[in-house]
Amino acid sequence: MSEQLLVIIDPAARQTDGESVRIAKDVLSAGAAAKVCLPEGPEEFARALGRRGSRRPVVVGDDQALVRAVTLLHRTRELAGCALSVVPVGDTALAESLGVPGGAVAAARAVLDGAERRLDLLVDDCDGVVLGGLGIPPEPVRAAAAEPVAVAAGRPWYRSLVRTLAPGRPRLPAVPAPGPSRLRVEVDGETVVDLGQPVQAVSVTPGTGGLARVEVRPLSVGAEATPYQASGQTVTVAGADFRYRADATVAGPVRRRTWRVAEGAWGLTLPTAS
Image (cartoon, rainbow, N blue to C red; front, side, top):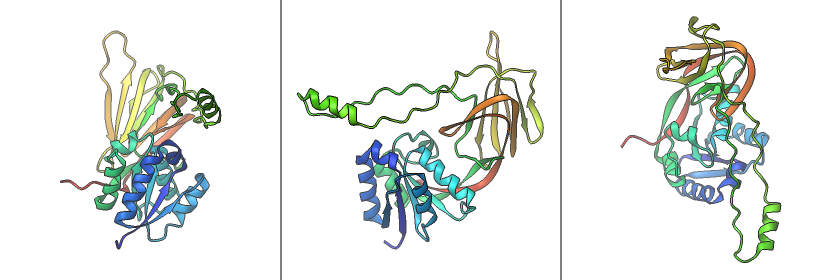
């Protein structure tokens, strides 16, 4: 067990699925010299990551925890020399889209037996990062269904007490339903669509080889219009105030934003090909 790990367990993961957290911690501790850190908030999370020393950081948490770790390392200019690992717990569509296994056991085994893969990153003009992609406008957030609370059968008074005391999930900000927008989209200085053409949606995703993939869906009347597609190193979107979804976060409104591709900017431990 020569490798040393710093296992940072995000507080949301401990609340969401304590059993998966326990399994991940057991598998990682059995396979490596693992130091487990239980931060209580973003400041302690950042402090733990900054004090990792020679230990390889492993984030146990959801997509927001993964993005937080990459953002912190990017802004301290330590991203190039640090390979991240993640055990997804909670909302993990982003992590899984990047190739991380979904189950706690499989993800923890990939941390121990996998290999680092360098991935491209989108960096905006405010030093924000995008790992998986962004969309304009953001899709409306659906209201989450109430979660059942496990209680003892035949004890309705206890059920009522538990529902009263159980902490609720934080409310997400309401996102307006998407509608046609008038935007100028430029890729490497070339205009893909201008303000005169209303668009339904714009998507930008990191590709390979230092290029971003851009797709613009124009507003169609009747038959569906063919999307405009382009690729390049820089993407600029400008127009009336617009919001966008970057990975799991909604940002804006802004009137102009530029993203550039940082090729191979960050490393993620993924399962090796069989």
